[in-house]
Image 1: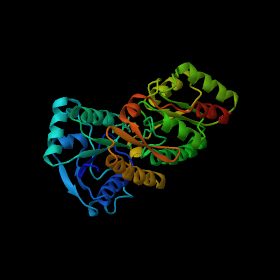
Image 2: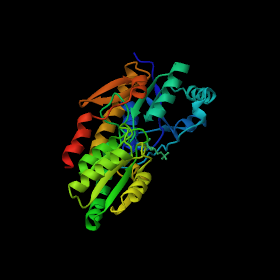
Image 3: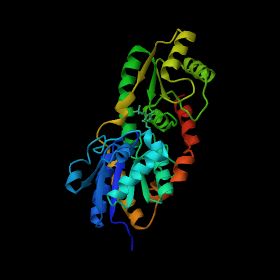
Image 4: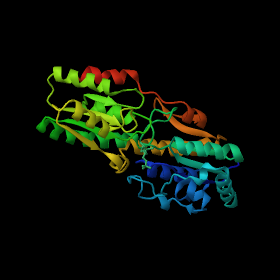
Length: 326
Ligand code: F6P
């Protein structure tokens, strides 16, 4: 028999579309199994500030379709220190909470894992980040929606790029990961991509531009992940404008529109499955694990693996861009 009677839930780090659907699934999954649930506002910072409130089935009505997170999110500096985590643990204990569900990305799971280890407290993570950069899961919540947002934006940019025979550098989110850039690049027929995982430099860009000139392309789209090594879309565009004045270069930085909006059906289903799987994991005595999806099946992955192992871009997808941009 599980000793867990009451859980808390929070969202942490950058918000992602589908986090609300995951909150709903955790709350209703917990209630279904007879557990009480408290929601914590503003992530780990909220735990430190004791911002916990009882949640009911009604508190998560009408949110499955909404972007953002009703629990709000934060990147907490105080939680990086053991004193902050101790205060958070004291508040959890004072409310009689036996376990915590954290929806977030790698930074959030690093904090979650520390809390679990230091205070022997059960914590289960649900991957919510548009970056899709957690190992041990094929997809993270929010990635599919963000990918579709990027694709819609780049399609529009292509209309004007081809009308004016321009070269566009489109910058997408991804400080350390190129999943959004690579997959949207394929989906939008980009001529090239720049991602953090591949050490591109201006020589590589030069080679690409030379090739594109030979091919006689009149307009081009280059998808740039913000964390790539040339210094981002603005730097790359400045360099091309200086070295290749024959190009009419423009830059479009998509920014935070990628994080907002109604979650896609894929993200809603994924979030619903993961939320209930998180409760089942806690009831089965799991702690210090993230819920993942591998080949459409729910899995439990140690936090350590999710955080420390870098999820790789599929090399064949990198080649695909080259093949398809001839
Ligand atoms: O971690 C997700 C992410 O969207 C990154 O891709 C991006 O670099 C970062 O968040 C931006 O965070 P903030 O909203 O705090 O500027």
